[in-house]
Length: 224
Image 1 (cartoon, rainbow, N blue to C red):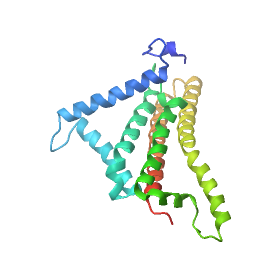
Image 2: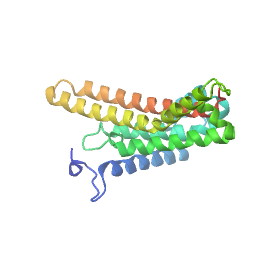
Image 3: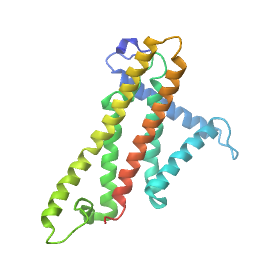
């Protein structure tokens, strides 16, 4: 679908940027609504968001550990909610899914890359280099250490690429599949298509935040 076919179209602004802004506005509005109606016994919107936030926090705690969960949760929680909203936007007729564009997914992956190495250096200092030298560190294993350094360096550099391309590729594939199935069986498959889209959007958001949490956990743990 071309930009002109979307319900919200700002001249000169790509559709993925427009709907990225919309996703951010939705999150801010819901946050303000929940903040103004906080109750000791949650209900309605507060109950839903507390369930989602608690699930994301538990993911951080189980992956990164209790000590670092609070430090990393703002990044992981924001990415999880933002990507989930963006994924589901593509299920609304006339709306665009920002995560079906590589620019959006790269913008989510690059901060994870920088945060990983920032916390690695903050926790370990110069010893963070040990994460790149492999399990054997001695003068006799110097050639192996050099080889492991370049292997690990390449592995870390491609992480933002794999994070962004995985999410982007799966969301584009989902859109193509939904369009094809909708054309082939428009009277039978719509409900099934919608269910598939909801499942794919949830799984892809979960995979992104899980991998991000694992990268952060690997940076702050001790090198062995």
